[in-house]
Length: 458
Image (cartoon, rainbow, N blue to C red; front, top):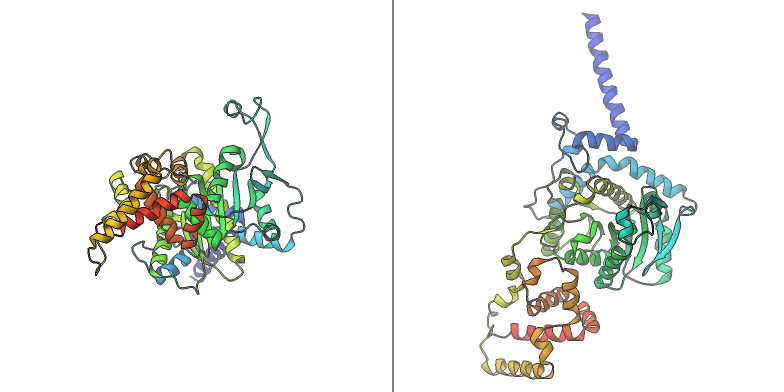
């Protein structure tokens, strides 16, 4: 009996030691942590829960917080969920911290060059033999010619153009960049003046340098994060992932399924108003609205950040590497954004302002209405052709960016001017004025239409 009890005790001791060893490997060994994730979830792009492992209390099987709740408690739950579901990234984050502490000239062995309008893009040094398709696309002269490429381009977005600040940010991120470069990313710090500038630069990069910039990953803090959100709202299809740290203005996400992966960093000490909080959580929910397992768990995350961002930056790097892993596995099967609403719903959304009832206490003043109509008629006489079609640079540019959107073709220029104008105005009067400086005709159209919309006759 004594021998039997000793055997049982030794067996349980062995099991306990095995669990401790397994936990230590998961915590410390990068390759093992990734392999355990794939064992629990399957390969990225073909994932499904392991039927036996899912019965164990492992972090991989934590369910996301319920999307129906919009509260400060939900934000705390999202932070805990992000920490647990990304627990496989802890060895990666530890290794990055060590690299940052020990780094000396981390970019010394990498080529840095200007591409188009973007300066100082660091390239990973990857090459491949050109194919017939790439020759036909005029990316190479002959088949099998060496062709430089990157698995993705990580762009750090700065909302200012001061050279010394750009250089300072570039040097600060050099160690993190090296970590990403070794995995096949190209990296850059890119200044932008507005969300339209950001959209223009990213579109040009993709169109003119597809071997480097076909897969874009944007990363920004505060105002830079705001610009990224606005660009993603307008055109979600051109990015694989966005890293949003402490945004000051969270616009609603696009009405699509098939979003880029999104990671939010927010301060636990900052209180958000109800609308901003709802938008924030809606971005997270839309990011996780996916048919495949990996994006349905990782596609939208929210993490608390401290004042210096160190923990968040290492978390973001691990997150980017996981997005890259998924993107490489699915390849051309990466989901394209699809509208959540049918064309009727889109039309209704675009004309919402027309259907609003008159404000309480506002009396019908026929004289005022006639004066405003007369003013519009005078404006039309001055530029009848443009007013008849509401044709302007902003409208043409927006339609050009969304040439594949069938629903947009059914929307009139008039409704588009109203929708875009209201969007700019929600971002702040200074934004609307800046847009007006670039396209005065658009601003004139919008203000004229807005005056008519606000009269009691409508």
